[in-house]
Length: 160
Ligand SMILES: [Zn+2]
Image (cartoon, rainbow, N blue to C red):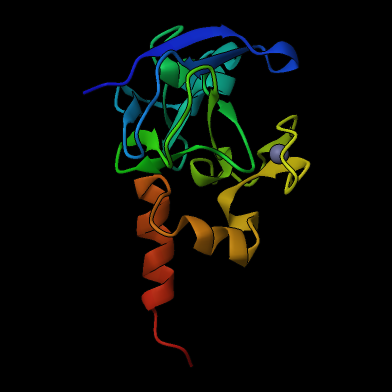
């Protein structure tokens, strides 16, 4: 069952998605499925809202859906699970729903000033490939499937 979500103003971050009711860990928040498009076929104004689903391939979520509105946090309460975003822990009514954009984006040119305010804030949000090893391991398989495929293949390569 999809959790109840409210899209509204999130201050300097623009719009955000908020819990309209308490949510259990594992509640489904948003889908990352949709029409897969080559980045250059997507108007630049939509880029900040798009999910990366492969190298140079993106899905633009429905306007004002939870997927469209969710902001980044370096200490998020939601994570990617398969092609969905789910609650990482129990969430209270009114909490902003966030996930870590670095678990979805692996474009090396990605660079965003972070306004999340978490104590462990990385200040600049960049591609998965630049995440510190400890942060990567804290997410484990909770990353976009194309990232999981690529990096677990690298990990399986025998060392020489
Ligand atoms: Zn941050």
